[in-house]
Every structure is written in C-alpha cells, then in structure tokens.
Image (tube, rainbow, N blue to C red):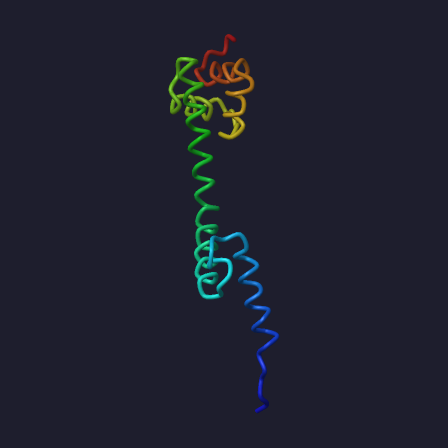
Amino acid sequence: MPRVKRSVTAHKKRRKILKAAKGFFLSRSKLLRTATEAVDHAMAYAYRDRKVRKRDFRKLWITRISAAARLNDISYSRLIDGMHKAGVEIDRRVLSELAIHDPRGFSEIVTIAKGDRTA
C-alpha cells in the first residue's frame, strides 16, 4: 500500500478551522486546538439558536398583539379565537405589524373578531 503524505489535506483542514475562528478572542483565533473547540461550540450554538430565534420572535409578536388588543378592550386569546371563528387568516407577524403601524386597521380586525359586524 502506498504511503500517503497528508500535508495538503491537513493544511486545508487547519486553514478552514482558523478561518472560521477569525475574530475570536486571544488564542481561540490563533491556536488550532482552542480554535477547534471554539468553532465547534459556536456551530452548536448557531444551530440551536436558529430554532430559538423563531420562538423569540413569536413571543415578541404575541406580546405586541396582546398589548394592542388590550387597548381595544379584548384579551389576546379571545382575539385569536374570534379571528379563527370569523375565518380571518392573518399570521401573528403581520398582525403585530398592523398593531404597530396601522392601529385603525388593527381595531377593525378586533371588531370582526368580537363579532360586531356593524362596523
């Protein structure tokens, strides 16, 4: 079996790790072993936090909708329930944007959700 010289492959692998660790603090961006640990942790956190970001934004939207709904004398849960029963299919992101930028339009949605079809 022929002898394999690893220099090119090994250098590519090391260069890839150190490139990913660019901007890390002290030896974490310079030394291979600490850089490898730092990059592995960073990748794990990035993977986890891509999921967490979705939760955080949904939480933020719900908080905004709830605050705007309270100004219109309805609770968040009753608003969402009323919207479902009225067949209004607006997701929470758009609803929170409406609550911030178009309060009058949001209050119209609230009246629909309340069942007051007079407005």
